[in-house]
Image (spheres, rainbow, N blue to C red):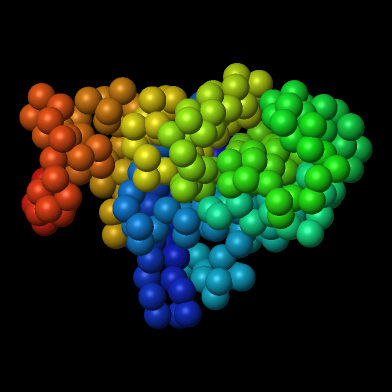
Length: 261
């Protein structure tokens, strides 16, 4: 299990971003983390993968554990070796390298399993196999997202952290990403899915968390969150009986969310 207990994170010694966050990602599951921009979702992923130092952040309270063992004091490469890989928002591929070179970069902590992991990635993403010698910078946005996910899988992770994988993609590609998340999970990889696309995330998740202003404000099975009237109104833009609300109405609802009162 990947677990966060009462986590607090501060940036630049003054800005408190996470405020006592606790979250559990059981082995074999898909867990969705929802929240608006600025809620603290990416900061939480940085804490899980050991990347806070790069952004002048630090954990001031709480702990991150993998199978009961604390990892919040480890370097990123050590955390990857313990089975955690992250796909960052914005893809972050190496545009000058070929597709296969990008994938092999992701295998630097699992050098003995490069061939097996490459076969797995090409099985999940046949298009990447077709274009393995192409320069990555010329791929489309959806193809680059596939490459970013594939690169993370090259480390053979037990836990995969996905930060907004559907961001900026056409609806057809969002459906592909959703199906790939399900397939990756079926192959034995646990997934923490951070998304603003609540419908997509909750449709595949076993459990869901909602984060607001650095705190977890809701924590329920995904099916219950998907049926919750508050979640429908704010995150899905739906009113009573599934009617679509205007942007102005949704913004107004932000000021009267029951869990923030």
